[in-house]
Image (spheres, rainbow, N blue to C red):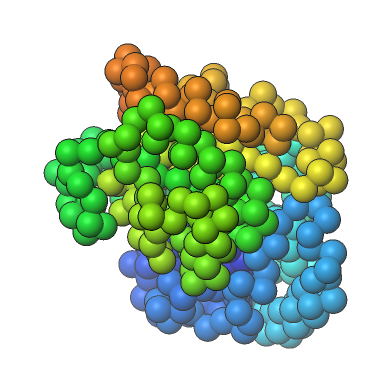
Length: 388
């Protein structure tokens, strides 16, 4: 069995890795090709272009990369149309993947979109494009399915692999102690992880605000430790330059990588809205969430937004469980106030961890195996129809 796949970001690479492993448990001879990252490649995946070339975001930012993205899209479509896989799986990256899925779907190739686009949140008319492009949507979260069912789009809630990988207690105190030992942090002092994102633009917008907030907190809580994990060498240099500008280079622990250890070592996480908020929630780490876009992108997105929250913990809870600040609300004063409360109010922390535990149980569903069974089931049904 041949399975085409495209993952455009690191989170998609992780999902693809788990899906490949689970499919091979049912179908050992399966082979996989398309675009993937290092985790998928380590599982024997054949990639036709570097995954990072697809890693763009927003409404405006992809325009500068449009010729390259169109070339990659044409090349992939040509390969798959002339040598059709048994099934194609587009993992997240809906701006790119749904366009490829539509072309392949029109040529009779069964298509799966793994990770629901945020169609329930904004741009709800996109549901018609999704319906025309894919035979099945695999949703990570339970609240996502109702919108698809209302529009008769086949959908299956599979849960989130990270909820399966992290224990229900979030690892406990021993895991926190071990992470602090690996990072060289004092076990007895409180610690806040600062995670302004993995992209240059995210760090440019959020990094200075996060660092100024931390410097103000240090004045009231002198024992505080701050850790900043950086996604790669370029982001490490960017953060280091910001620290030199504010004169705080000696007050922070900055690492190349180690994002998972940073979360596990922390008592509280201050982070950009995104997938990382899910991991912090599953680890039962109290958090404050912030996000800022370019002014034009924000102006477009805010007009289309149909939900009251953007952070995953709040969307999953259906309420403002964690403090979140967007665009012009992202100020040192707002972040300071929210973090100070978590540092001084044990009841606020307890309420968060109870809510996190409830959500964890809801999305812990053996996601990789459910997704694998859904993909293989679609491929077999299509093969049976074709054979008939």
